[in-house]
Image (cartoon, rainbow, N blue to C red; front, side, top):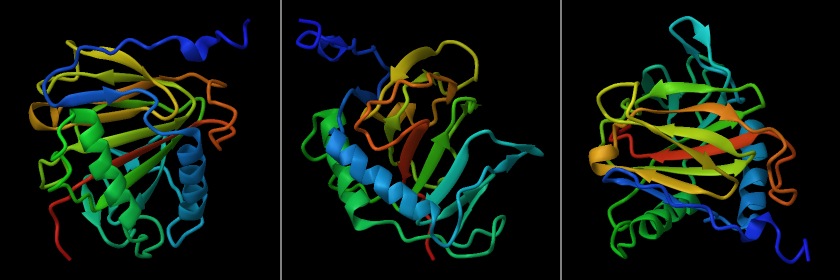
Length: 223
């Protein structure tokens, strides 16, 4: 009986989110997650290795590999000037299609993805001790939505308001396969990761430990 009626049958509550923010639990299948994890290992072995960026003199606990454009505080460049000077990998066409499909799934609008062409992704790896402070994604010139995908261990995701790092905010546990989108009035909402829950990743997601988070963005840059 326990295998028939396990925790996977418990429907997770859908939080009430501000306008422009959308949460879709278990959006990626395990097969899709494994495939993306395999791509992640390819990216980290690419021309620019995964690294922890330095913000205001402090090294982040999260490690990042970028696609399309290289992000460093607080600028995008084609070359990883703060790592090894190499040009980052191109943004893959399949991820453009995935981002468009994600917007449709998140909003319920069949036309939501038609004008969405992300050109960069920050792919963050969180180990058990990694955290991300409250911040805004505001280095982009475009106000197009951010599409976020989670694979691996569950994390506590804190989603706040556009005015301050402090309350009001709400905490949502993002699990492997979950989709979160924020755009429109919520595009510049403060958000962060105060905690990762070790050992919570599904055994078949392709990631042995830790958490991968992919955030697709439209930079609005040329060149």
